[in-house]
Image (cartoon, rainbow, N blue to C red):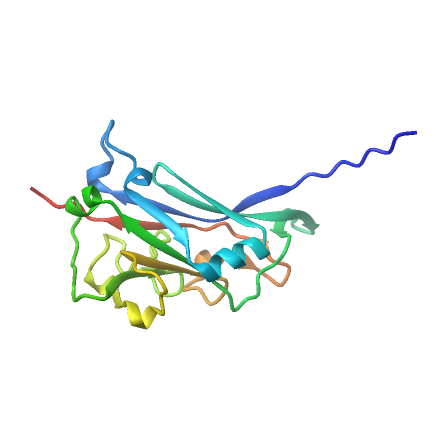
Length: 194
């Protein structure tokens, strides 16, 4: 008799970030994933590995996905993280842009040593934008890199916290069981008008 064991790994979206830019929404223009690069910092790389988290970036959408399991309660079936991250954790992503992107984008360089800072705790609170203003990235989004304790120079630092979001729509998880909310965050860059 042959024993067959079947297992299946289930991955679900943990969160996504949709980037928009008026100069890059024309047909046949380059995709924003060609103009932007997003990588986790070293600590987040370790957290991703420990919690079975992966990511991809295509067209204008960065997706972070996590291994999960199905559960059921009185409300029906839902998905929870297979390995639930501690509530005090944050995931830090470093965003850089091509020179083509920069010359077509309204950019307030501020002083040297600043970076744009986006997060799901302090945000516009509208349509899940994680910048200070849902109409577009502005100088109010700049922070000194030294304040961000960033170990890499980047155009932008994006922190996604596991708890204490601006409102419930920005939370990664609901309840003590780690129910996935899969929030679709947004960042809009303004185009330079010629």
